[in-house]
Image (cartoon, rainbow, N blue to C red):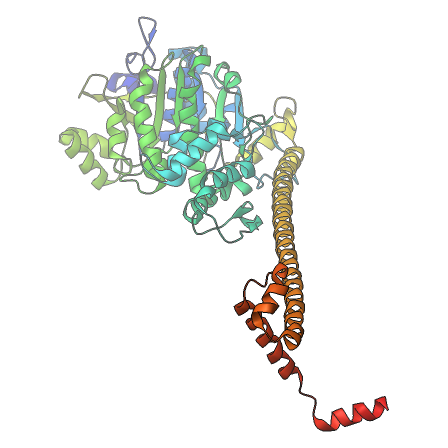
Length: 564
């Protein structure tokens, strides 16, 4: 038999690799497996490994879908391709009936986005949101692309910790505005509703512009939400359901929003660890096409994602009840160098690319025999294993089993495949409308905006009232000041009039008495203190009479004639 021939040349499946996969003496062994193969079969082998983990009690979480093809979603269907069925039939006698063609229970998850189609029925999917309050330094670091301690990250962290359970994206943005706004005073500022209604000012422009740029994509992909949203991920429910494959996708967000989809991967990885208290089983985290997420020498936000994955790969093996990972890549050299080193086990199939083979052999010290195996294996789709023991390589080759469930073939389309199964079995493969979800989220976004508009209008109205009150007080003070001036003028006018009357009395008395001293004695009670004062008053009044005597002679004559 062909199977016996293969068995005599290479090791079959994973019968002797308990250290490699799942258990030893009934204790779970946590490993990180990285599968390399540039040719056909990489995904099949990864799915076969995942299936083996699941059989041994692991909870399966696929946290990335870089090709946006819902690859692991096909695990809910029975395979139909002849090569796949032939392989399963060949090995079923060796490993038992569990490797006969079959399928797995799958739960699909997708973050909410306004790209979600509402004009047609879709495969049953858990549409989810993420609360701001669950975001930590790793998530904000990726979005802001800032290392270590930084004012922007600190402000974002503080805001996500301190906002209320009812605060969403607008309230979050304005919380940050209020926290940095104290640096500015002076000219009037105006809310810009294209920019979350934030007030742009010179003092806060740097911080607020960074925040608005970070948050702007999430108005369209509106899955960053308030703490009490009904659509938030239920981590307890997810991490206690070992029966299902949990497949997270982002295909409706699209390839152009790579930073948003990469953020999701980081968030999911970080939050599996944050919520490990719910685990009752060990967990396998699956990351297909890891070179898409963690390329060689990553830059920009990719650097933050790669650092998070590397850090977590080094720590998760001791976390909770045991967490392992399975990842794959077409080209060994395309994967972040530190990440390759962080993987405890590497599987090498046919690499195809001569340059990649040379780099692998040079880096790992492999000789010509291994180089030939990496170029063209004696048995198709067999793999070399490095890492079962530190620095070791088993060059006899392993033929890994295919999964019992369907694999994503190049000609397949997930939604079409699902609809086909729906026609035969609508109860198991229901189609659903997500128009209500989209309307709920539109309403939530609109309510958030209106809530902030009312708050800002009230704030502006209060500021206007305060300004009006200040103006009224200023006018009142001005009027009071003006009133005081009028009183002073009237008093002065009265004083001047009184003084003029005294001057007149002194002048007339002098005409009779012809003595300044006698005049001062007569009007001493009217504050004419001395003869000098009397003289001063008399001279002043005489001068006034002279100045007022300006009517010309003709006028005098006319006046006199008029009297006659």
